[in-house]
Amino acid sequence: MSGTWLEEQAGIKLDEQAGRLYGIGVGPGAGDLITVRGARIISDLDVLYAPAGKKGAESLALTIVEEYLSPNTEIRTYHFLMNAEPEAKAAVWDEVAQALKDEVAKGHKVGFITLGDAMLFSTWVSLLERIGRQPWLEIVPGVTSFAAIAASSMMPLAMEAQSMAVISCTASEDELEQALRNHDCVVLMKVYGRLDRIRSLLNKLNLLDYALMMADATLPTEQCWRRLDKLEDGLRLPYFSTILVNKNWNTSR
Amino acid sequence: MSGTWLEEQAGIKLDEQAGRLYGIGVGPGAGDLITVRGARIISDLDVLYAPAGKKGAESLALTIVEEYLSPNTEIRTYHFLMNAEPEAKAAVWDEVAQALKDEVAKGHKVGFITLGDAMLFSTWVSLLERIGRQPWLEIVPGVTSFAAIAASSMMPLAMEAQSMAVISCTASEDELEQALRNHDCVVLMKVYGRLDRIRSLLNKLNLLDYALMMADATLPTEQCWRRLDKLEDGLRLPYFSTILVNKNWNTSR
Image (cartoon, rainbow over all chains, first blue to last red; front, side):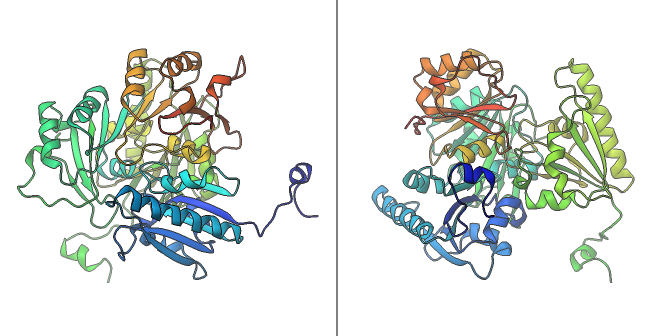
């Protein structure tokens, strides 16, 4: 007898040949900070789609999952043109969303991997918008970069009745200041190229002693700066740099 | 020859007998949403400390890691008196922090597990405050509950230049309204007992169509309410209930 009682009641027969799509957050960078579920699913895929930062460049997300990949899985990397015009970006997303749906229709198990969590500041969401909620779709959450930074630096984020904001340093001065005034903890993403401005703002709000900066968290190239008031001149910041602020945690102590 | 070249250069000899402490976020609830690193460490512990919600009650965090436990690991559950007086809570934290340090001093590998991520709204932080940054301490991040809710409900959180706030429903009306006005996405934690008040606020801000509520995400008892304007009267909400708001994602469509 195939199928379970519930499936028979619902008139559904479990189809082992049915295609499935998985949107998988692979975590912050270290290969073993993916979830057990993510690793298991990746090891059993027919096709894996991975985003590449620059055309032709190796995908960091792909490097993370390398140890779990089966030799039977076909890998396709896509360049998502992060700095291109909206129309050019949309065209790539349309194309990849269609390719993913086509694979599912063929009965394949297909995965799309993305750094950090799948639903927070993630390329995957642009594909989800196009694909929609589907019974053949499963999304696997992942460890966010700021959780990894907090763990690596041993600087906690909000607790109990405290609140936290996560905001990009590309936001306006007013928005950044408001977030820093209103919340106990603030995660400032995309510091790259905006460090002087952010340091001035933190200094103005007397928050320099309650902030730290980390780049490449959980990767071999990880760096942490605990004294933002004492950075060397001309510091060359890696691209993945984030500042954590916690008003209840003095980082200079 | 024992030790690596690097260790010899640094005059450090790797001491296999040295004690280690691990603060581990075990993820939102499903056993396979722990990280690979967390699962590997847990399978190799001498002693595991787990928080229990109520005195004598089974620890959900412990249930999550059950499948990874070695029979050689001694398990100790602790009741953290979440609703007790600050002094009574502090006494338990002092006691557990001391017990963890004592185990490390004995040369044991000891773990402390906590639901979700280790550094965000986590009991572990009260212990970290007492233990401090130590060379024998490693913190392993985990998947937060809101990442799991977003994945299970297929409702995304902030992307690109958007911002997100995470706030407890125990906050004041003003703080909640400010967070909902200022951010694209808001995670409202600890809804339990405050649902009517939150619904009124969302209605006032015309956000009911951009919100959903989930309880027990990724557990067999998971429930999702996509129409907060149409909840049945006298709904009995499970304890772990969270509302996600995303101004760019209409949940009634």
